[in-house]
Length: 157
Image (tube, rainbow, N blue to C red; front, top):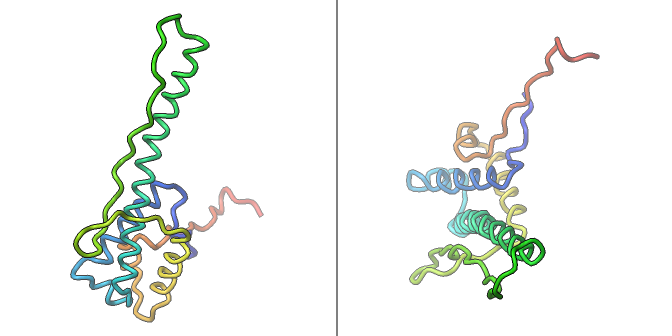
């Protein structure tokens, strides 16, 4: 039966997939990483991307809230009651940058442009491996949902 793409359509879905992949590829002393020939550099890239993606999700919440607050404060010039001058609002405090271990000391994680090209290639390599097991793919979050056959009752030719 055909399947949908493993890549989620939402940012939260992508975060969940990256967590599942990063967590489970390294579980059991890296058994799946060894099985599918992922080296330490590949695993580090995936882990870093997971942290950076989540940082963006968290930072976007802060930025959206600040933007709404900023708009409301600006609008008070138009609709607010007259009052004493007030200082302009400050910038938001973003979440702390995630840290990755690059040996002592840990360093700030960095954005990798085009990461998902690498990740898609990695997933394709895993799925094309002779020893690929679909249950591994489900555990890693890289198996899309099955596309159900059309309903013969509601489908017209």
